[in-house]
Length: 355
Picture 1 (cartoon, one colour):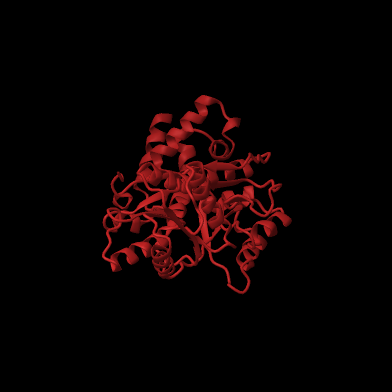
Picture 2 (cartoon, helix red, strand yellow):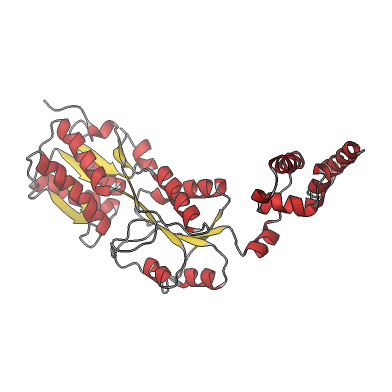
């Protein structure tokens, strides 16, 4: 008799126009509604065989717990706030797109959704304030952590949970969780690659001195050059991150310092170097080697293929989600910062080995 009742419940739920309900699961599993609720929200309260029976019924019916009702009970939205900035015109890299896609994917696997928001240029903290006041999100992921950015300090002051993609440059004693990529190691890797190919005059084109990320990447170039006993004087330039800036800086460098290779702080600047070489009827790779940073889609598609430092953004997203899960656990767990190491994607602009 019980088996017939369960079959009828399953048949009604499968052929019903509306989605299966908690009551449908309870009837199919032969348990109370409270038992189904416990299976969804407090599985530790159930015996193993009862939990297995309820889970089987949930899978068979395709039951989806009512997230809104669950949020009211737990006071949890299962939403993570992420501020996005507009793509800068005149640049080749959309590196954050890869990170955001991976973050959304990995957050979903952990039971969270990412809520994207923008902020007013006049008041960059307004978006954070609105979401915090409305308790619309459980936590934030912060992506701009360089000097001068206020959101990390602002969120710390309000004890708002957040994980930073980027180390706390302005406060080494900060205790919030963070994940970052070692930019110096990436530039060192790129420079060492060109040194191994026989280059001894390797120029650096980076960002302005007030860019902490640019200076970190530049330090990797300096480190590799000094380790090999090679000069750096007169071989470095700091400019805005734009194709036109890379084109102008490389032209001056070729005239005044005669480098045989360039390492750049971004693919955008590297594309500018390639423009200069094309204008002078020089081949990137065969005549002058070029290495970029970020492994953008442009690096992967431009002829003859731009060698570029690739940040492990998919791994970074995994680590950010792990940190979020720890932060939102009961009790909250804050682990140490995580530093990831980039790799080098070698393509045609590395050129042949030099005799």
